[in-house]
Image (cartoon, rainbow, N blue to C red; front, side, top):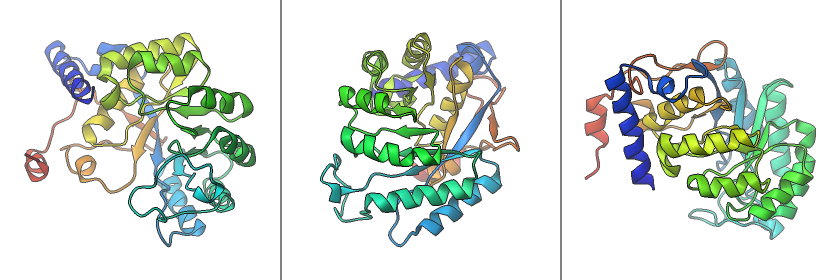
Length: 293
């Protein structure tokens, strides 16, 4: 499916160049800019709540209207549903520490800043409901992937119990999988990944089904520069496009790959390139530098 996704994105880029139109116009062209949020707030050994707040403050100063941070590494609760990569004890925190981290970021962003938390499928439904209720005081924009992707009933239970919207699930594939999440009430905000779920062609079908069920779409875009720009075109093209995820972690394949990288505007949005296709040009030296195989 990932190979199909990449080919599909490339073919839409070619179609745009043949038609002399940007891809987002070929797909529908609902807006020419999309609000972006800073995707960061990762766990790190020695990184305190104050350090996390400073990170959030830096995003706010740069012009981002929102930030997403990680929560959920709470294996001591014995409800933890996901193996930690590498060292099992790496960055374990108590639930109270996660709540303190969220509180610190809320203070840094201010009351109007959009704050999202990403659990990465780590909680049980009961734990997600408990933590979700604790975090309601911080006015979260969404809680992302609170439970395992295939626990559709569990996610629906969490969505019914909480006032905070539930977003997900980036690892789901194709219209069939997202149809189940949407129709069974497991998500309030649909997060497909164009590079995993079938590219623009399948993404359009998922977005249309979400729109028919009054759901917004916030594409997951945590990879390289091509996916970031494809996700920008996609969010600008669909009527229910919500925002653009902009990963803030060091990533040479995102930061060095384009001759003209995207830019955050003063209003917190990113303009969609008006050039044909995806409107991007790869830096061939960077391609050669990071080529594998």
